Image 1 (cartoon, one colour):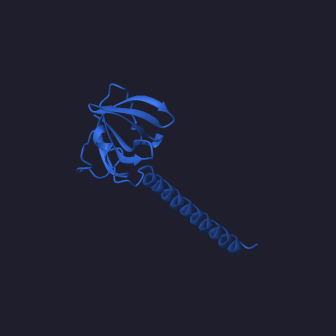
Image 2: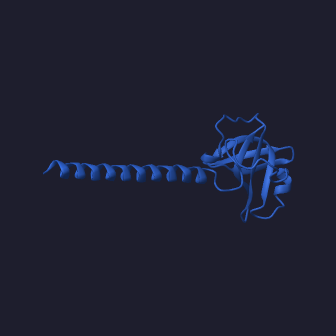
Image 3: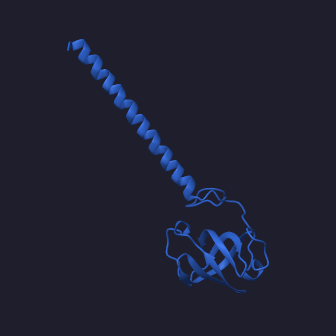
Amino acid sequence: MTTKNMHATSGAAIKGYQSLFFTLALALMLVLGAEQIFASGNDDYGRNGSGYSGPGPALVTVEQTKGMRDDTRVALKGNIIQRLGGKHYMFKDETGTITVEISDKRWPAQNIGPNDLVEIQGKVDKDWSEVKIEVKQIIKR
């Protein structure tokens, strides 16, 4: 192989590696960007101080949610007083208690105990026999 051929071959190899590196970097950025999109749940609630900061659903009470339609967006202020198992918890305000469903990705990066006042935002989830709240965001107050 001549010196000229060696330089051409190594130049092509370098360009190939640069292209591969660029493709991998782009793929990584897309994955990380998609992770942020999916982590937010695409549900109109910001996370970690980002996103919309204006008014959300009006605050309602536990008693009021029991008469609302399925999938109604709500916000409640009170305490998460007990873990019922899995992702189900008991939420309490001044009007009563209701089961709330909180997936692991919805918990903020802080501890919340039964004495901590929180605002939960989510939607009403009505079944044949019960009403619960599917939590989209928890804000420690």
